Length: 318
Ligand code: GFB
Image (cartoon, rainbow, N blue to C red; front, side, top):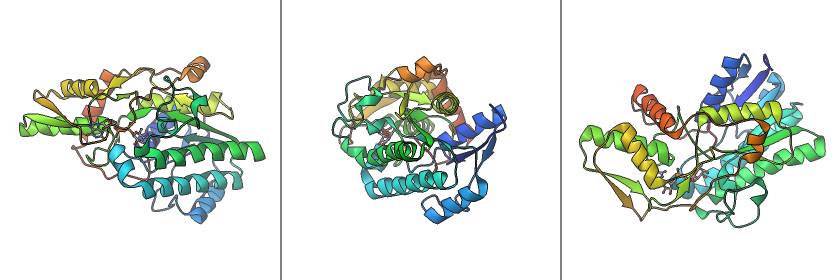
């Protein structure tokens, strides 16, 4: 399908910008609302903008996001901003009679010790990982909002759960970023400054599943076109890697020859969270970008963008 008017909420973030690139390449018309025009935490502003613009569909990539340290340090910001954005966009979408919406969550919605690989039906079966429970609770609320508007008003609102993401337009701020951009920056700066070691947080043993954001963008649009279910659906790479192996992979990509040091005073977070994405695979989506290629591309992007440190934004989901 083409020529649709699709609002990418959060178009400046890593996920939103990947969705925008993908949709525009396909001929869809992407609506964008800059933060200076619409503060997504302001209910009236969101409702007025949506009623004026009435998109055919909404891809909901707007969120307050960050890595383990940011989640653990700013719990009020993570729960408040995300709940406000979700209630405003999902309720206003209904009020503006927008019938299609894809909400993006995160694999941290699942219990800390969920059976692996994690199936969609593991939701709400056990306690959450404490370092990101505030963000997780907000994302669970987003899933439930979509289900509630579907149940009461027959709205075709769906939810897609990505694993850990990376790619162009990531946040490379060392305090607030996720692990992969942090490692790219740490190894690059250590190489440039001739440092003998790089500090990696935690024990290096946690396992994570990393998906390139361009693969996610294809998956989200695939779901918009092919999935219309009440249950949320997982969208993951299907393989996992330890933080130590990830660090070694990034080290090779950057070409740094020093030592790795593990700072075990920093939290590991959840030990493992690989998702079972077989439902989405069975519908016909599969990732295409290998972790090695994706990391090489992410490093090129970092270099081309002047190694700029970016502040965390209200504009990226993962
Ligand atoms: O990417 P990350 O912050 O997110 O951390 P989570 C993943 C793992 O990498 C943790 C370790 O075990 C970290 O301790 N790590 C090692 C580092 N070095 C670093 C570093 O320099 N920076 C960072 N950030 N980590 C987030 C959640 O959890 O994942 C969010 O807090 C969200 O809610 C997101 O779900 C996808 O995978 O631990």
